[in-house]
Image (tube, rainbow, N blue to C red; front, side):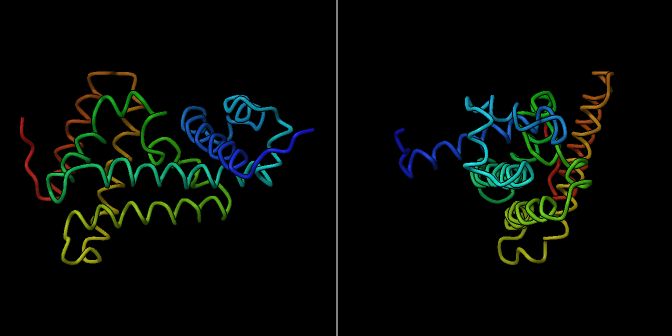
Length: 196
């Protein structure tokens, strides 16, 4: 039987993490069993334990990965300063983000489950979200990001709650109005006016 190279094993692990992140945002942590997660990655259940000690281990790693993606793909790839912060807020509180949780923020998709998870999952989440918060704070006050850390945390909480509620509403018009008001509130928090 041929042995896989270290690079192949690492690529396979990364594929499992990426597909698990998308699946748990779609189906939730409890709704994503090992068999489903491995099937999504194109692998058998037997391969799981060559990469992870438990489902919790994979979930913790996938949540950390999703928060890292949020930071690198959104926070770092938007424009600098206030303009970049506004760009991020507009994306976050958009109908597109509301309607596509699999491609969106893990906070809005998983926060309720993370809050009920064990210590290691909550710690993985805390570690990852603090990086996102610090990225937001650096946009608010580049000269002193620590001064804006609580405001950045409040901004994230406001945006996450708005998207979660907008996703739960069956009245599309009401959901759209909620996103629009959430956008106004978030922009006011960061000192930017809503422009048409």
